[in-house]
Each structure stands twice: as structure tokens, then as C-alpha cells.
Length: 288
Image (cartoon, rainbow, N blue to C red):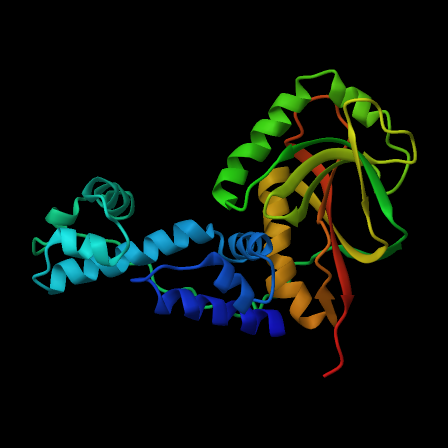
């Protein structure tokens, strides 16, 4: 459960620096992973993006200070990194629903977002159907779009990319290439470095790469494949959360750090609901 300890240490760093500059790179270093992976992991486990969490925690602390001290609104804004009164006003109202000036009045209703504490989730009776698969390298072919290290921005990019792709004839051409496992249309995020992050809509195939498409090879690995039945978006996110908080801590495995694979049925309409899978690369836990 070393990853859980590392993640908690990263949160402690963030909490200690709410009134200072917070480095995502430093938080990721403490968590022993890349900045991109740290933000992705955080959003799955916490259910909120890292930037939104920091914003809510800062505005919670700002509200406490406005109510219990005589500090001016501008001074509190500057303390929590807002040089513009307008941007502080906007951020404060997005969390509390009232202006910072109004928050100084007695009887004002405010929202307190407390520090996140990560722990293993204890559950019972809720099965997670899975299988372990050993594979050679998986070669994928399809189209891709650039992502950023900003998870909130990526959450806008990926749905738009799917929507645009499903409306084009090219989607059918991608589907026709599928002849290897995992069978289906695949959604895969691939991180090379901060300037080269891509989301692929692709298939596993041995066929040649058509003009206008890209290929990528995922190294041979051991995978845990989770099955889903339901709404794709919500279920896929739930799988990642349960993988980290329920399955991984007791499995004897560690996360391998390879691209995760979302597997959807090949249907020529917008995939929203049905049977899907999530493949996550794993490796045996190091001996203590």
C-alpha cells in the first residue's frame, strides 16, 4: 500500500502550502509518479480534479479568515494567490455562493471543504468481475488528439474528440482494422512527456497503418481486465477508483504505469451504454 502513503504525503504537501505557490511537479514527485499520472490518479480516487480540490480548500480557508479576523478582502485574496480581486471574487462565489465581502457578515452560510484523507475502502457484497491476462506487445492503430497535463481541460477534450470521430466515416475504417485482442474500439491515453500526451481512438491490429492514422505499441505486460455493464463514462471512472482503493491494496500487485485501455463494443453510433472493459497493466509487488 506504498502508493497510498505516497499519495497522502502529497496531500500533506498541498495542505502545508495552501497560502503559497503549489507545485504540481513537487506533489507528483512526493507521490512518486509523473505530474500527468498524479493528476489522473488524484481525480479518479478523490472524485474531483486536483485544481478544483486546491481551489475549494483555499476558498474554505479564505472563508474562515474572513469570518474570524479583521483582514481586508484584498489581503486574504493575495494570501491565497489571487492578485486580481475579480478572479478571487469569482473563485469565492463558485465555492460559497456569496461574495467575499458578504462572507464577513455574521450569519452568512458558507461551505467548508475539509482536507481529503485517503484510506482503503472496506466493502462487502459488491463484486468486481475481473481476469488476469498476459499479453505480448499490443499494437494499436487509429487516430489521436493532443492532451495536456490539465485534467479539467482533458475532460473537455476527450468527449469532444469522441463526438467528432463518431460522426465521421473514418470511425468505420478504424473498426474494420480490429483483428487482435483486446477486441473492440479502444480509448487509450498515452503519456510520453509534458509536451507529448495523446488520447487514441483505435483498435488492436496487425494490419498496416492507413494514411492519416497513427500506430503505437504498448509493451508486453500482465493486465487486470475489469468488466462493466452500464453507462460507459460513469462505470469506467468507478472502475479506476475501485481498482486503487479496493482491488490493488490486497492483490499483491502494483500499478505498472503503462497506458490504461478502455474497451468499448464496436457499434456505429455513439457508445453510451452497454458492456465494456477496462484493462490496467500491473506487476508483482516488490518483496518487503
